[in-house]
Length: 288
Image (cartoon, rainbow, N blue to C red; front, side, top):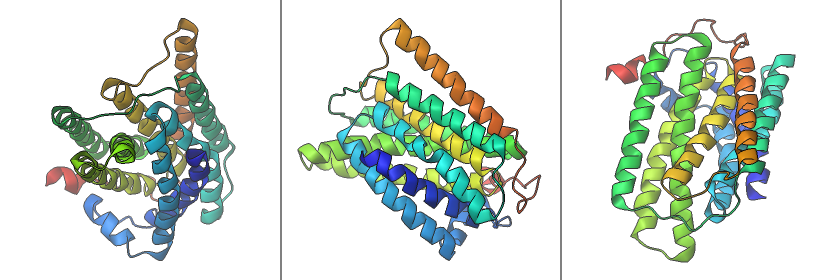
């Protein structure tokens, strides 16, 4: 329930943040965030998002990643409508179709995933491997975004954001669940790593928003985030995947519907207040 209640708050916060980020075209990848934190509208969006995220964190401490993470997508259609209202533009029919396809696919996938999970644990070697793989993927997303334009640029930035937030969610799942049992050193060092990946996810997210392709960016984020979190849950935290043929086929169909929704959103033109061919926002990051 906490994850479901937090989704609309996150959606509202995302819509406010994208409006502020969409008007910041002259900031580099790294400097964008420092500029946005001085913008009242972005700060309001950040506070709203924080309220929704707090409820999501409560859910992560009490439920498996394979259940909690996909619930965040329930706010996607709401976010599309709110973003259009803030931008004072009409909602495109394909925006709604794409958003509903993504939402339907992820909800269906959620229903097919096992809802049982043992308390997660994470040791030092596993954390090193996990963080190393995550940073490699984030670096790859940054490089691909630098070499891309338009929808592809927004896509890779949003994928990077989803990876960052997915790892953040997995680490919060470990830290929060451990804290409920006992306060140990694991709570603090895992929590510290979670903060690092949260900041990385935030930087990629805001740069994706300023491309003017909010529906695509937010939908891709909502897909990449639970996929990353669920994979970590299965591969590292010993959570489960569907174990029957019918469940497996249903999960594949749900994934296909979700991907179709993302493709629909990727084909839409950017919003009017953003240049059609934006400069590469990650050029400075890769060059450093």
